Image 1 (cartoon, rainbow, N blue to C red):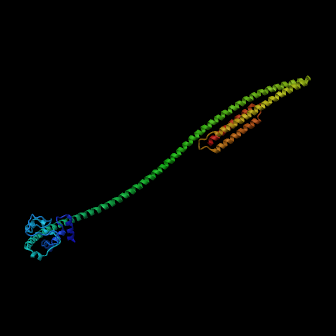
Image 2: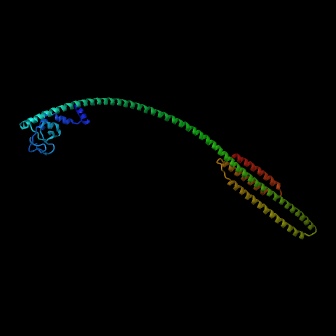
Image 3: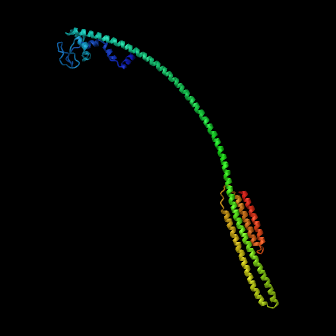
Length: 372
């Protein structure tokens, strides 16, 4: 097996002669058959006779001169690769040029053996060198495999250490993320609380300003109504005083007429005066009714304005608004009942009631502020 492997390796190197040709050349009988063939009728290139001229043209790869010197020098014309016909030794010996062929064959064999020996020596030297190189290469491969295994182990260790470091970094990163998340949630909670407080304060301030504006507007309206009603009461008091004076005069005239037996004239005058007084009374009643209508209209307008006031704050209490509406309704009911039962000749009663209503409205506004 070693020789075959060596032969293969030697053939792969690209030597000038193949191992197969060397093996064929070592077969002496084949050599004798090649050099002792003679021309025949079947041969495509017949061998010329001994007395043929060198200048005679023949087909390629045919022997021109059978001398030993010529065959040794001119190796291209050696009959090694001739036709498949190979004569025997007896045929060579019986031929006229047999002795000369035997000498040339012997000389050729000696040269071929010398060449084979040189080739065998070279083959052995080359195989020994190749074996040494192969051993060195195997040793290098073993060293390289050891180094590769060592580096593989180092790589595995480094990978394990790197994986552990990555896991530790991930754990630390997760812990930091959890801490930052908790801190962020705390900050968001504090921020939301502060913003809610600020928003409620702003809304309360805006709502309080709106309430103050509405309170001032209602206070001015009530003051205007009170002043107008007081002026009307004063005018009515003056008119009533004049009417009383006229009644007194009329009564005196009536007594005087009755005393002077002028009943008819006095009665007619009295009827005229009574009609005039009745007309005045009806006028005052119509005035009072118009005032009541004005008051009702103002109450409706106040209610509608109070209901239309926007509530911008989310913290506005609906229950407190309902209570304020009820309190306003009670105040208006008291005002209407007072107008129904009040004496038109007493403006002080109306002024006192307006003051009491104003104080009640102030108290209700204070309670609304607290509820808001």
